[in-house]
Image (tube, rainbow, N blue to C red; front, side):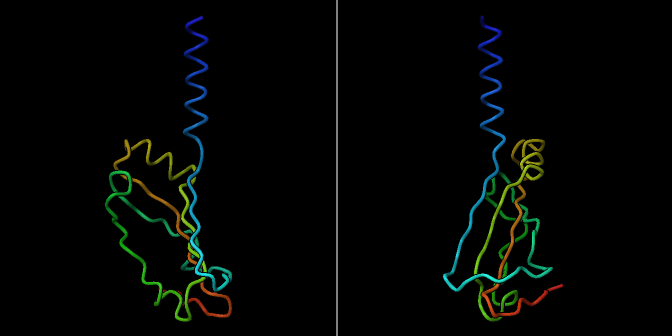
Length: 108
């Protein structure tokens, strides 16, 4: 009986921890298609995201005519890296979409 309870608790914990974290921030200007340099950027953080390694993004440089949407996600791979490093290194994926009608500058 204890083994079945432990197995059920472990399964519930695995299911709860397997979800992805997503945040979308919209400016209200309508978002266009992300450009090559703004799509799926690997953003690095330390200690649960308390300290940034990548630093902030200059949205005026990336979207000269304004930004439309910022999408931040901790997908499975980034979550796995976080777990393997015991939450010391915490990467996320960021997508910047410029405002519709504006051209996104590729900063590379």
